[in-house]
Image (tube, rainbow, N blue to C red; front, side, top):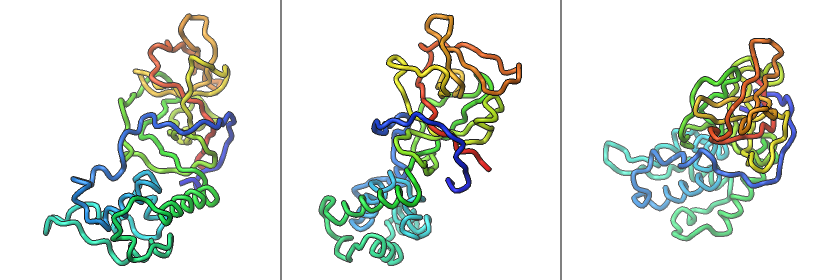
Length: 264
């Protein structure tokens, strides 16, 4: 979690809207066999989780103060009777306390109204003021040593841990492994990244993440003498971390590192 990390530093935050890059599905999708089969109260809670925390049950459970397991069970059928469990009084009380929902709300088959809109605004304000901004930790490693490792074709949101960013307009967070970018980006640190269009502008000498067929790497990017390539440099002065070129035609995506959250 964010309180276990200290801010090391990075600049370059922009005001562009967050884009969905790798993430392609909702967290709770694996639980729902048929959304339309859900009882109305369960469906209303499901929609809230989707809208307030992008489908992250764990994060939503922390917001309202109930155990994640209590929420999980109302979104999947009980194998003993093949029915969805009723929304518990514990959940109802938590939502009433947090957002002021009355009993009628759970049985009102209407689209988002004022109460739900206020809940969205309140949740967003609470996140910004108390914790920061929600982003997701991709379950892949930035191989901070060489062009080895792996590049995943796609990442599902249910496999991503929700983390809190102290800055807005972050696309994702990833974990750095290896010593080539130490001491500024030590192994195990988390970096906050945002996708850029390298055809428009590259800020030479800054740190970027490159998603390549041979792996995901984090390096300082410099102009290369080779046409169509960029030169990747390590921060660690150890001579074993030599610069290397990457052909840009083989790069799936390029991401500017905005900030590093380093484990204490």
